[in-house]
Length: 310
Image (cartoon, rainbow, N blue to C red; front, side, top):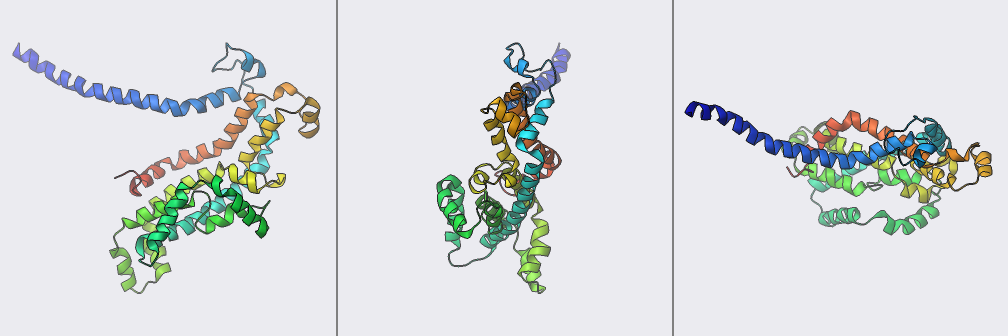
């Protein structure tokens, strides 16, 4: 009897450890489904015909895969032009913020100067105040500078430590540099290195994790930015990919004659919710591909920049 009880103890112990793990997996599955559900819904709807959309029996799996929705969405969005403009603005603005925000964060973390606390307070304030509240002064400023209907309002602020989410990026770099030992820079200064050489050869290689976090966040936010381009850029030739989704929404309200004249679409039933979903998927698909390659380094960078509370 004693041997039988002793033999069941390991089984009970394993079961006791398995129950919390099972509960954890169920919770993770439920939380992940909340985030994955909109994406699955978008892909499923983007492949449906007009008949499938109006058939209440068809919920997830379309009866026929209608890839023509993507061709229609690409035509309405002018996908090639929008992709080229979005790629240009995203890459240049991201490069500008990597340079300017990293140096601003390094200065706030390492140098002691009068007004340093005030500067950091301004950075925190810029993180809190939304862009929508200062969009009118920005518009008037860019109008006086002659920057409207150009990419300058989207690119130049990025090289000045501002731009889209620039204050957050300065904060990330500042937090990371504050945790670095000062002995590294002091040793380089003893060897006769100035600021630029110390930053290029000592600080930059160590801060690759912080750069990776800012790189991914900047690429995502600049690529999907819709508000500022819609305010400062109104020329069709300079339209970004995110702004092209507005063309699909506008096309849904047009008459059949206007669709055929403007967009060369002679079937009014070709425009529906499936085309909107197809255009949305085409817009976010480059971000999905990018994150698939950078997710491991991005997560490692989040752990090393002090953003996880460790």
